[in-house]
Image 1: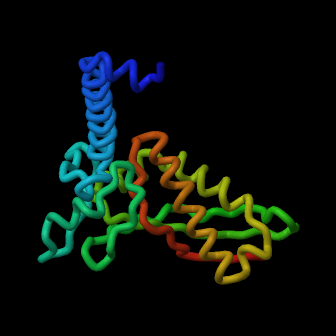
Image 2: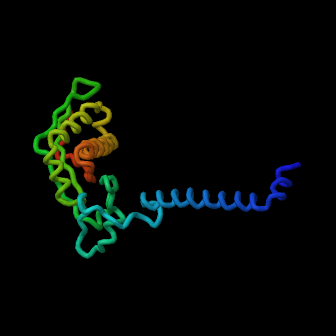
Length: 188
């Protein structure tokens, strides 16, 4: 006797299996849907922005709903510079490091910007020693070829931004630095 014949003899068993299968599908589907909604993958971004985290500073005349689109709970997204106000902070002293592959050295002044409120720059000031250390470690990994080309300098700026944001995230849970700038740059 086949399985279908056995199920046909017991009409309640086939119905019970269908109901259990449907219930499992609803539970699993609901869990997946809830997870996607919670992470912001469904219906765009979450409309709730934690007020305890640094907030994006809007330019005059820009609707507040724009901030939700660009907000990141760790400060990783780069906002549209036409919609937000940038704040700048120069790290006080210049950095002097030996180049990795030669007897030369590099002396660099570094500044940074954020589109988030004053709390990000306050965090940079509070943790300036850790930020400076992250910058020094990144600079000391450079070689002469990297730092003498425009592409190399651009890549270095990206590496510095990543290092500074990582240092801030480790200490405050939020990066928020959008751009790193060279205020001076000498290679010898």
